[in-house]
Length: 456
Image (cartoon, rainbow, N blue to C red; front, side):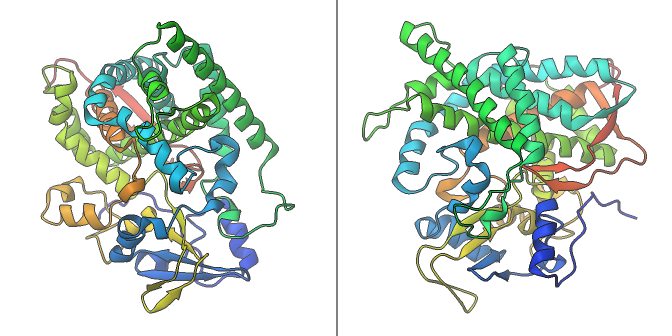
């Protein structure tokens, strides 16, 4: 019998709005009905407006690629994330978003990623060294992957390791923040008046303010180093010294704080989630774990050229992203009328795109709930990746750091599994829930055993 990776239970087909709101506040994944895994589109009605979840590939393509200006990011997404992200590229639209991307994108181009690789490699080696103290006992692996991903971000962005005092404080506060704040606030679906509370816990607002204060400190120090000509040539320096090719303007301190906050969210939080789930999946499927370990230990050198040699690791990581996309849902807002499956979509309607459901859709994937990295080598790989695989979104608003993530993830995975064998802890089955990213409600528990260095 095939062992399936854990999946949250679906709610009953029909529930009251009050019941749905309660379920949504607990977890947006288990608040959805099972029919969304086979439906091309579903309509959700409120007394104020209509929301549509879209899974049909050509409609997803229309929203993200063909007519992205007709479907800008919903301002209601900012209801949940603006206290931390301010006016960052993740939340803006139109001309302001285009300006921000013109400044940011060059830092993440292919040639620049080569420059960040030594810092990524140092973080991966540091992770392997830390895990040496955790062998033979049950380890909550999400904590370890969060630590490793934060280390990657601080080393590549500010040239400081996670052990730096400010970096440690940011990491600690961010961990608390992600545990208390869902990726979609209820206001993403309900147009709440200004006077109504935004459902933030007091601790959430406090943590967001403290994170931004710490990032402001790092940003101000780096701007002073740039002015003095002593700044290292890392991502922060590249972005702070970049200029909009159209206007010649760059980011001021406040704008840079907004962008660093989203880099940390996108680059740390999502990577930590993806890596933790990948390690758990490989603990469930040891035959794939051994393939990753053998590939990693066959490499002669660990320089940037090694990235192209991590083919098995990359397919395994893709499959984990398919099953557990870090950002499970995205919300767009229709700006003009459209026709979706014989329904007239009115301006103001909310369009929900769900990588979680799209990437497990029963009409698009063979055995959608199974872990099968081999599917990425089949003939339908290109079709699936083009039409139903959007862990980093797609089109003009595709995540700037997608290429960064697809180097970081397989690298950390390969380094860890070259050194350790991972096994699930008996009786500890993780329960996926959506906070800022898809995490486990009860942690992801694994046991690590040191591999014989003479093998392979």
